[in-house]
Amino acid sequence: MSTITQNLQAVTENIVAAAREAGRAPDSVQLLAVSKTFGADAVLQAAQAGQRAFGENYVQEGVDKVAAVAQALPGLGLAEAALAWHFIGPIQSNKTRPIASHFDWVHTVERAKIAQRLSEQRPPERGPLNICLQVNISGEASKSGVAPQEVAALARQVVDLPNLRLRGLMAIPEPEDDFARQRAAFAALRQLFDSLRADGLELDTLSMGMSADMRAAIVEGATIVRVGSAIFGARHYNKESI
Ligand SMILES: *Cc1c(COP(=O)(O)O)cnc(C)c1O
Image 1: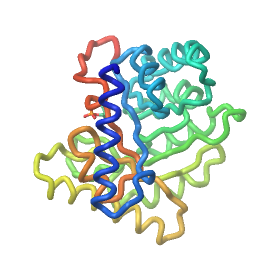
Image 2 (image 1 turned 120 degrees about the horizontal axis):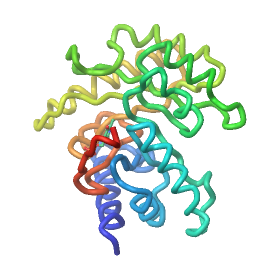
Image 3 (image 1 turned 180 degrees about the vertical axis):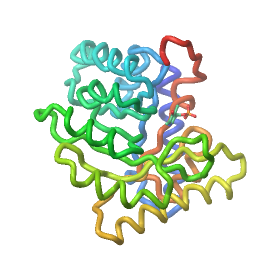
Image 4 (image 1 turned 120 degrees about the vertical axis):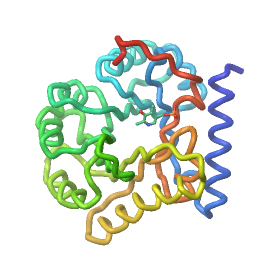
Protein backbone atom coordinates (compact mmCIF):
# COMPACT_ATOMS: atom_id res chain seq x y z
CA MET A 1 0.00 0.00 0.00
CA SER A 2 1.36 3.47 -0.82
CA THR A 3 2.09 6.01 1.88
CA ILE A 4 -0.69 8.24 0.59
CA THR A 5 -3.16 5.38 0.81
CA GLN A 6 -2.04 4.56 4.35
CA ASN A 7 -2.20 8.20 5.40
CA LEU A 8 -5.68 8.57 3.94
CA GLN A 9 -6.79 5.56 5.94
CA ALA A 10 -5.32 6.96 9.15
CA VAL A 11 -6.85 10.42 8.61
CA THR A 12 -10.22 8.86 7.85
CA GLU A 13 -10.02 6.82 11.06
CA ASN A 14 -9.23 9.99 13.01
CA ILE A 15 -12.22 11.76 11.45
CA VAL A 16 -14.52 8.90 12.36
CA ALA A 17 -13.18 8.80 15.93
CA ALA A 18 -13.59 12.56 16.39
CA ALA A 19 -17.11 12.47 14.98
CA ARG A 20 -18.08 9.65 17.34
CA GLU A 21 -16.54 11.53 20.26
CA ALA A 22 -18.81 14.45 19.37
CA GLY A 23 -21.88 12.24 18.88
CA ARG A 24 -21.92 13.08 15.19
CA ALA A 25 -22.45 10.80 12.21
CA PRO A 26 -19.00 10.05 10.69
CA ASP A 27 -20.29 10.78 7.19
CA SER A 28 -21.28 14.31 8.23
CA VAL A 29 -17.59 15.27 7.92
CA GLN A 30 -16.08 15.44 4.46
CA LEU A 31 -12.33 15.14 3.91
CA LEU A 32 -10.84 17.69 1.54
CA ALA A 33 -7.36 16.52 0.53
CA VAL A 34 -5.17 19.63 0.15
CA SER A 35 -2.78 18.79 -2.67
CA LYS A 36 -1.00 22.14 -3.06
CA THR A 37 2.70 21.79 -4.00
CA PHE A 38 2.17 18.08 -4.81
CA GLY A 39 1.93 16.80 -8.36
CA ALA A 40 -0.87 15.23 -10.35
CA ASP A 41 0.63 11.83 -9.52
CA ALA A 42 -0.09 12.35 -5.82
CA VAL A 43 -3.69 13.34 -6.58
CA LEU A 44 -4.10 10.27 -8.79
CA GLN A 45 -2.79 8.00 -6.03
CA ALA A 46 -5.28 9.48 -3.60
CA ALA A 47 -8.07 9.19 -6.18
CA GLN A 48 -7.20 5.56 -6.68
CA ALA A 49 -7.53 5.08 -2.93
CA GLY A 50 -11.04 6.54 -3.12
CA GLN A 51 -10.44 10.22 -2.29
CA ARG A 52 -12.70 12.50 -4.36
CA ALA A 53 -12.32 16.11 -3.15
CA PHE A 54 -9.08 18.07 -3.57
CA GLY A 55 -8.03 21.54 -2.45
CA GLU A 56 -5.61 23.92 -4.17
CA ASN A 57 -4.22 27.29 -3.07
CA TYR A 58 -2.46 28.72 -6.12
CA VAL A 59 -4.36 29.46 -9.31
CA GLN A 60 -1.89 28.46 -12.00
CA GLU A 61 -0.68 25.38 -10.15
CA GLY A 62 -4.28 24.36 -9.52
CA VAL A 63 -5.50 24.87 -13.07
CA ASP A 64 -2.54 22.93 -14.49
CA LYS A 65 -3.14 20.09 -12.04
CA VAL A 66 -6.87 19.90 -12.75
CA ALA A 67 -6.07 19.48 -16.45
CA ALA A 68 -3.27 16.93 -15.91
CA VAL A 69 -5.42 14.86 -13.56
CA ALA A 70 -8.43 15.00 -15.90
CA GLN A 71 -6.31 13.53 -18.70
CA ALA A 72 -5.18 10.62 -16.56
CA LEU A 73 -8.48 9.78 -14.84
CA PRO A 74 -9.91 7.58 -17.60
CA GLY A 75 -6.84 5.37 -17.14
CA LEU A 76 -8.05 4.73 -13.58
CA GLY A 77 -11.56 4.04 -14.83
CA LEU A 78 -12.82 7.35 -13.43
CA ALA A 79 -14.78 10.11 -15.15
CA GLU A 80 -13.50 13.68 -14.94
CA ALA A 81 -16.61 14.62 -13.00
CA ALA A 82 -15.79 12.06 -10.32
CA LEU A 83 -13.49 14.56 -8.61
CA ALA A 84 -14.40 17.89 -7.02
CA TRP A 85 -11.84 20.71 -6.93
CA HIS A 86 -11.92 23.33 -4.18
CA PHE A 87 -10.01 26.60 -4.35
CA ILE A 88 -8.80 27.49 -0.84
CA GLY A 89 -6.13 30.16 -1.45
CA PRO A 90 -6.11 33.95 -1.43
CA ILE A 91 -7.87 35.44 -4.48
CA GLN A 92 -6.64 38.39 -6.51
CA SER A 93 -9.35 40.01 -8.58
CA ASN A 94 -7.42 39.49 -11.85
CA LYS A 95 -7.38 35.72 -11.18
CA THR A 96 -11.08 35.10 -10.73
CA ARG A 97 -11.75 33.83 -14.27
CA PRO A 98 -9.62 30.66 -14.14
CA ILE A 99 -10.99 29.94 -10.66
CA ALA A 100 -14.60 30.32 -11.85
CA SER A 101 -13.85 28.16 -14.90
CA HIS A 102 -12.00 25.24 -13.35
CA PHE A 103 -13.13 24.81 -9.74
CA ASP A 104 -16.31 23.49 -8.14
CA TRP A 105 -15.94 25.29 -4.82
CA VAL A 106 -14.24 28.44 -3.52
CA HIS A 107 -13.67 28.66 0.26
CA THR A 108 -11.94 32.01 0.41
CA VAL A 109 -14.41 34.71 -0.63
CA GLU A 110 -13.98 37.75 1.60
CA ARG A 111 -15.15 40.65 -0.60
CA ALA A 112 -18.31 41.35 -2.59
CA LYS A 113 -16.28 42.44 -5.61
CA ILE A 114 -14.59 39.04 -5.86
CA ALA A 115 -17.93 37.28 -5.50
CA GLN A 116 -19.42 39.41 -8.27
CA ARG A 117 -16.59 38.60 -10.64
CA LEU A 118 -16.79 34.87 -9.86
CA SER A 119 -20.52 34.94 -10.60
CA GLU A 120 -20.09 36.88 -13.87
CA GLN A 121 -17.26 34.63 -15.05
CA ARG A 122 -18.78 31.28 -14.08
CA PRO A 123 -19.40 29.26 -17.28
CA PRO A 124 -23.18 28.62 -17.21
CA GLU A 125 -22.82 24.98 -18.28
CA ARG A 126 -20.88 24.23 -15.08
CA GLY A 127 -23.78 25.14 -12.82
CA PRO A 128 -23.45 27.37 -9.76
CA LEU A 129 -20.07 27.72 -8.08
CA ASN A 130 -20.20 26.68 -4.40
CA ILE A 131 -18.99 29.41 -2.07
CA CYS A 132 -17.80 29.70 1.51
CA LEU A 133 -17.04 33.07 3.06
CA GLN A 134 -13.67 33.22 4.78
CA VAL A 135 -13.96 34.75 8.24
CA ASN A 136 -11.11 36.33 10.18
CA ILE A 137 -12.00 34.51 13.37
CA SER A 138 -8.78 35.17 15.30
CA GLY A 139 -8.97 38.88 14.61
CA GLU A 140 -5.39 39.75 13.69
CA ALA A 141 -5.09 42.69 11.35
CA SER A 142 -2.74 40.79 9.03
CA LYS A 143 -5.06 37.83 8.52
CA SER A 144 -7.35 37.24 5.56
CA GLY A 145 -11.07 37.00 5.90
CA VAL A 146 -14.05 39.21 6.50
CA ALA A 147 -14.53 40.53 10.05
CA PRO A 148 -17.18 38.56 11.98
CA GLN A 149 -19.45 41.59 12.32
CA GLU A 150 -19.42 42.06 8.52
CA VAL A 151 -20.19 38.47 7.53
CA ALA A 152 -23.98 38.83 7.50
CA ALA A 153 -23.88 41.79 5.09
CA LEU A 154 -21.48 40.00 2.73
CA ALA A 155 -23.62 36.85 2.86
CA ARG A 156 -26.70 38.86 1.81
CA GLN A 157 -24.80 40.18 -1.21
CA VAL A 158 -23.48 36.77 -2.21
CA VAL A 159 -26.82 34.96 -2.04
CA ASP A 160 -28.21 37.40 -4.60
CA LEU A 161 -25.58 36.52 -7.22
CA PRO A 162 -27.05 34.23 -9.88
CA ASN A 163 -24.15 31.87 -10.59
CA LEU A 164 -22.99 31.30 -7.05
CA ARG A 165 -24.41 29.09 -4.32
CA LEU A 166 -23.51 30.24 -0.83
CA ARG A 167 -22.79 27.10 1.21
CA GLY A 168 -21.22 28.36 4.42
CA LEU A 169 -18.21 29.69 6.26
CA MET A 170 -14.50 28.93 6.37
CA ALA A 171 -11.73 29.99 8.75
CA ILE A 172 -8.04 29.43 9.38
CA PRO A 173 -7.57 30.25 13.07
CA GLU A 174 -4.18 31.10 14.52
CA PRO A 175 -2.23 27.87 15.14
CA GLU A 176 -2.77 26.75 18.75
CA ASP A 177 -1.35 23.73 20.56
CA ASP A 178 -3.95 23.80 23.28
CA PHE A 179 -7.07 21.77 22.48
CA ALA A 180 -9.43 24.02 24.43
CA ARG A 181 -8.15 27.10 22.61
CA GLN A 182 -8.43 25.34 19.25
CA ARG A 183 -12.04 24.55 20.12
CA ALA A 184 -12.79 28.12 21.18
CA ALA A 185 -11.87 29.54 17.75
CA PHE A 186 -13.91 26.92 15.92
CA ALA A 187 -16.83 27.43 18.29
CA ALA A 188 -16.81 31.13 17.39
CA LEU A 189 -17.12 30.29 13.70
CA ARG A 190 -19.91 27.81 14.42
CA GLN A 191 -21.84 30.40 16.41
CA LEU A 192 -21.63 32.81 13.50
CA PHE A 193 -22.82 30.03 11.18
CA ASP A 194 -25.74 29.25 13.52
CA SER A 195 -26.75 32.90 13.68
CA LEU A 196 -26.79 33.23 9.88
CA ARG A 197 -28.93 30.13 9.65
CA ALA A 198 -31.26 31.48 12.32
CA ASP A 199 -31.59 34.58 10.09
CA GLY A 200 -32.84 32.36 7.27
CA LEU A 201 -29.75 31.66 5.16
CA GLU A 202 -29.67 28.03 4.00
CA LEU A 203 -26.08 27.14 4.81
CA ASP A 204 -24.78 23.60 5.20
CA THR A 205 -20.98 23.93 5.25
CA LEU A 206 -18.45 24.73 7.96
CA SER A 207 -14.98 24.45 6.42
CA MET A 208 -12.60 24.33 9.38
CA GLY A 209 -9.78 22.21 10.71
CA MET A 210 -6.44 21.17 9.16
CA SER A 211 -3.91 18.40 9.91
CA ALA A 212 -2.98 19.80 13.32
CA ASP A 213 -6.41 20.80 14.64
CA MET A 214 -9.04 18.77 12.84
CA ARG A 215 -10.19 16.91 15.95
CA ALA A 216 -11.15 20.16 17.68
CA ALA A 217 -12.84 21.38 14.49
CA ILE A 218 -14.91 18.21 14.17
CA VAL A 219 -15.96 18.36 17.81
CA GLU A 220 -17.17 21.92 17.09
CA GLY A 221 -19.14 20.96 14.00
CA ALA A 222 -16.85 21.07 10.95
CA THR A 223 -18.49 19.57 7.86
CA ILE A 224 -15.31 19.87 5.74
CA VAL A 225 -11.81 19.41 7.13
CA ARG A 226 -8.97 20.56 4.86
CA VAL A 227 -6.05 18.21 5.35
CA GLY A 228 -2.75 18.41 3.47
CA SER A 229 0.44 17.29 5.21
CA ALA A 230 -1.19 14.42 7.14
CA ILE A 231 -2.06 12.90 3.74
CA PHE A 232 0.70 13.96 1.36
CA GLY A 233 3.60 14.64 3.75
CA ALA A 234 5.62 17.80 4.37
CA ARG A 235 5.41 20.51 1.72
CA HIS A 236 8.40 22.06 -0.03
CA TYR A 237 7.47 25.44 -1.40
CA ASN A 238 9.12 26.91 -4.41
CA LYS A 239 8.54 30.39 -5.69
CA GLU A 240 7.04 29.30 -9.00
CA SER A 241 4.09 27.62 -7.34
CA ILE A 242 3.16 30.82 -5.53
C1 LIG B 1 -2.39 24.31 3.22
C2 LIG B 1 -3.77 24.50 3.73
C3 LIG B 1 -4.45 23.49 4.43
C4 LIG B 1 -3.80 22.16 4.81
O1 LIG B 1 -2.87 22.35 5.82
P1 LIG B 1 -2.15 21.08 6.54
O2 LIG B 1 -1.65 21.67 7.80
O3 LIG B 1 -1.10 20.62 5.62
O4 LIG B 1 -3.21 20.07 6.77
C5 LIG B 1 -5.74 23.72 4.81
N1 LIG B 1 -6.37 24.87 4.52
C6 LIG B 1 -5.77 25.86 3.86
C7 LIG B 1 -6.49 27.12 3.58
C8 LIG B 1 -4.44 25.73 3.47
O5 LIG B 1 -3.85 26.73 2.82
